[in-house]
Length: 183
Image (cartoon, rainbow, N blue to C red):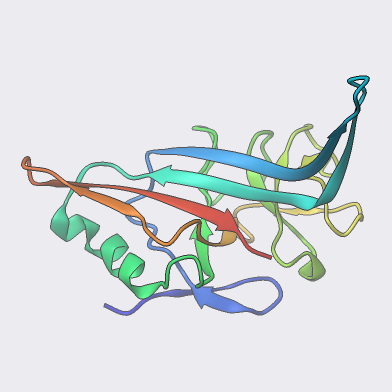
């Protein structure tokens, strides 16, 4: 089985994580580095460093080994946290679809700007794409691409050197992967 590829807005092509089966649950963190200093008087000062980064854990449904083969092959293909790949972000809302040409509050979208290197943002304010989280790294007012134009893919790598694949006596395989956004 050949590994599919995905081309990001800036023209970079990376291996694409299999889309089938799709994850059934996910934990997404928007990590922002912050330096914290606390004086003897207990006065606390903080300063953010750099931009935000998406970190996620994706849990897949229990599946027979032949259904899990694509994911297992991909995990053998990538070299731990070294290889960068594309992961299609799951839909956050049951009313949204990958063929939508409208924007939905609470969904992840691609910024329509090549220099942002396919940065993903979540639309938080209806019809106002400049109110997004995480904040835009380039400091510009973005426009967003609807899913029908470009489905949101996270440019990422595995968060660690080992991913757990659980085999059980019931014949099902359970997979959970941890990824971290790469720029």
